[in-house]
Image (tube, rainbow, N blue to C red):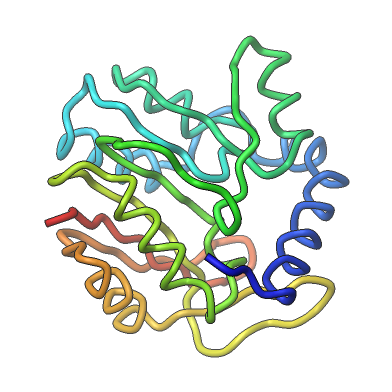
Length: 202
């Protein structure tokens, strides 16, 4: 696929931001996922089975991967930020460098997880990225994804894209995935709205 110059620049800016912020981020997030995230990850494991192979896009510090592995799943940890991979390597966890916009995702996987990461993908590219996720899943495989809620974009040093719940659900369905569960929540720290979806490939 042809990647636009705008998409490449957006990816570079986000990666550079996290390269500088990774250590502080690791301190802030702690060692365990939020309770609502744990519940979503357990729901994913229930759908695909505890012996499944999972691709995690944007592993960050790796706390969600740790949780999934504790449930018995095998996780391919990936991130576009080298510093996050170094932080995980320091605790004996191997991860691969992967940019969801520019790189092939491999597979087939039983599940793909992308929590708090795809809202950095420009609206013009989200359909292509979701198609890559669907292609990387086996038939019946599951996709757990969370997106910032709202309308439009927030522009600053890097752009974040906001999605209405129904609009993003339609994007998932357009790639051949059916939403089997979703929830909306507010971040208690900053009041941001988030939509989390569990979709299954038909």
